[in-house]
Image (cartoon, rainbow, N blue to C red; front, side, top):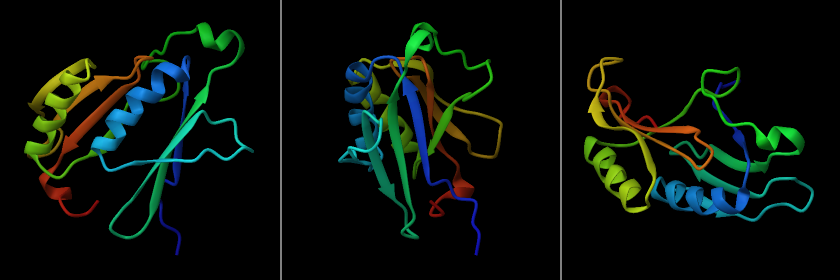
Length: 145
């Protein structure tokens, strides 16, 4: 059976030494584990998480190369607009917000309820390159992820 679940996501970052500690901290809050990086890959770091159905999803950081390294992330340009993660409750959103503040993370939008779907409650922040990460609670998705 073909399912459309994502397998992995590679993010290109300008400075892996700056981005790795950020993603270590943030992804560990979501249950991701840092994985060894295979010597046959160009990834600087990799994390993975397993869901209730035993599907594994991983996120890797790839170092930017050449002149692209000088470009700033622009979420309105072609490519990734933002990355959103499900959490289990509004309290989780608030807890993540407090932990992001403690880490000194740039907050894009503080916790708030949005009108996208009933009960949509989220906080968003920026990684060291300005990539927007959103942490969202949606009551209708509770227990599905």
